[in-house]
Each structure stands twice: as C-alpha cells, then as structure tokens.
Length: 380
Image (cartoon, rainbow, N blue to C red; front, side):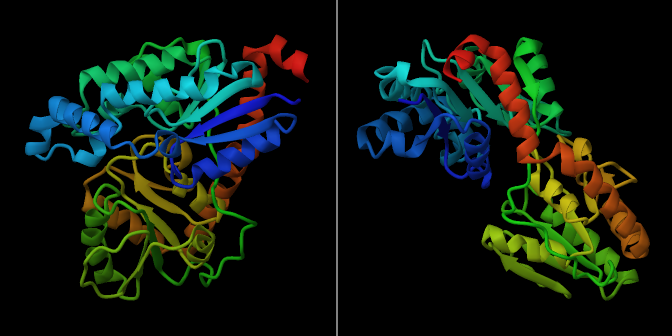
C-alpha cells in the first residue's frame, strides 16, 4: 500500500491551494495525496463556537469596540481555536501516523503538525511581517498569546517554505527561526491554461487594469485620485476594476466585480498597464500573472513586490499612499507604448522561470528529500 501525504489547507487561499495540490501531485506522484480542509475538519460545533467567541472577547474585546479588528478576523487567532485545530489534526492523523510519509500545510494560521510525522509549512505571510510596512499601527497586531502560538508552529515544522525573501527575513528576525530550516521557494501563477495573445493595440489602448478583492487595502482609493490626474493629460485612458465593486462615479471607469479565475487572462490581455498600489501585500501573485502576460506594472514599493517587479525595467514601484507619484508613473507609461512593450517583455523573461509552480515544486521536492533522505529513499 503506497504511503500518503497529508495536505492540510484552509479554503481557497486566493486559488493558491488548488495550485499547490496540483504541484504536490506532480512532484510527489509516487504517493497518494490526502487533502484535508481545516473548515471541514472542524465541522459545525456550536459549543466550540461559543467558547471561541468568549476567547475573542477576552483577547480582543477592546479592539472590537475601537474597531481595530473585526470579530471575523479574530476567529482563528485565539489560543482556543489554535489548540482545537491542533487537537483535531492529531485525532485525524495520529491514529494512522505510519500511513503518512509527511504532512504539508499552507498558510500560518494553525499548526497541523503531529508528533512523529515530518511536517512542512508553506506560507506567504507572518503576522509580524506587518511591522515592515510603513506607518504600521502596532495596536492593530493580534494578541501576544496568539503570536507566541504562531511562533510555535514554525518551531514544530521540519522546514518552513516561503513565497518570498521578504517573509523569510521576518521568520529569521521576528521569530528567531533557524536559517537552515527556512527556505524561499517562490510561487507561480494560478491562471489555468496557456497565455493568450495580447489584444491591447500594441499597448496603445491606454487601459489600466486593477485586480483585487479588498479595494481599500489594495490602494484603490489612491488609484482613483491618481487616475483623475492622469485623465487631464490622457483623456482616453480607461480604468478597469476587477475583483471588487466599489461605489464610484468616474468617467472612463468600468467596474467588473468578481469574475471566474479562468476569465482573468482576458482582462490581462486587453490591458496596457497593470496597477495595484497596495498598502499591505503578503505576496502578490497578481504581479507575477501580469508580468507573465507581458503587462508592465505600477505597484507599491513594499513587501515582496520589489522581488517581483524590477523598478525601471518591468514597471515602476511607488511609495504607498502617494497618488501624485502614482499618477506620474502611470502617465509615463501611457505616454510611451514602446516602453510598455519593453517592460512587458523584460518582466515576462524575468518571472517565467523563477515564478512557476513547476520550479517551486522542484525546490520543495529537493528540500524535503534533503530533510528526510532515509525515509524517502526507503519509500522510493
């Protein structure tokens, strides 16, 4: 009977969990993949919900009153919920731990490790990486008791894989993780199927694409201010908003809202510029997807974005909360379709090798083999 890999996930994770599942299938094809969703694992337990609500009030009551946090954002950030998930995972895997070769979880909201089973974490974020962002309000950090538990999940992991060097630095600086156990393996595009040819009139159609679900956090209000300035010199410029539906009255602005993932390539192919002036971004796969589609980027100079976008080569990086600088960067690209083309080609070449699920899978396979050579050699 073949050994199994336990893949533990939480919901869609911005469509990344489906890509990770396919990557594990491809690069560990000799093992059966058992997918465990935390939401399904917990089930509907009203008593547990009440107990967790009491802990939310205990740790975040004042923050809720001051609107620093929402009840929903605190749901998985209590010691009670952390312990409950850990217990349920041990119940799920512990009885048949010998059936598994290792466990692998995405994100760092919970600890899915089980004693006696090698465990790997793949994440785009740490909570304390928020301290790297400009103007961070420390009062909005979650409870110290929960942050200490977050640190424990990294200690319990055989290896921690990150999507960016930015998050790896946080694990070393804020959580004092062993550098040899924390490795950046990057990530890939979640768009299905091959790229489609550009339909942007050789970057002359002046279409600016914004794609994000969280309008405010992704810098949408700053983009609106900048776009109004841009329209003074480029009256034919058009802003396309995908992923959310802000209430706006703005000339030459199309609000599309949420669309199926497989339709996103159409919006990339029809854009001359991708713009996301985000104020906080754990990774930013949309930047990878834009460059893979040869669309130059205007983004914020924070988080992992400078690792993806080369300022002055594949796009422009601007300081967050700066609509004037944003408008200048957009205006420069709108005025120069040939530069857009050069930036798009350069960005495509730069990201297509590093940021693919195949190359990420190869890195993960290599590191897992190095971490447990005897086990994998025996099972191969």
